[in-house]
Image 1: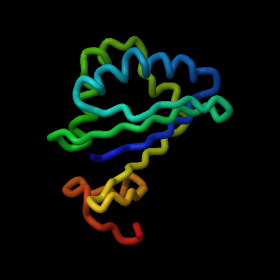
Image 2 (image 1 turned 60 degrees about the vertical axis):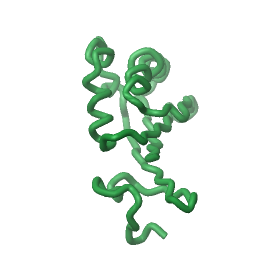
Image 3 (image 1 turned 135 degrees about the horizontal axis):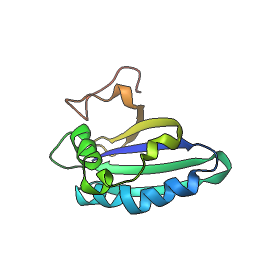
Length: 122
C-alpha cells in the first residue's frame, strides 16, 4: 500500500470551514473510490490540517486522485477548498516488503515502481 501524509497550512480563520468540507465533501468520494482514510487531524495552534491516505488499488495514485477531484460530490462544491491553502507539504510513505517504513518527499517517488531504491533514501 502506498500511503501519503499531507499537511495543509490553512489561511487564518478558515480551518473549521476546511475541516467541514473535508468531512462532508472530500472524504466520502475518496472512500468510495478505494482510498483508505488512515487519519485526519486539526492542529489549531499552527492553522494546519494533516491527513494520511492509503491506496492499494489497481490504478496509479494520480489516477485515483484525479477520480476524486472529478467525482460528483467534489464537482458540486460551491467553493474550491484550495482557495484557503497557505501551503501544502506532500510526503509519501512507502512500506517495503521487509516491513520497514521510509519517508520520502513526493518528488522521489517513481511513477513506475513504488518499491524501487532511491539514492540518498537510506
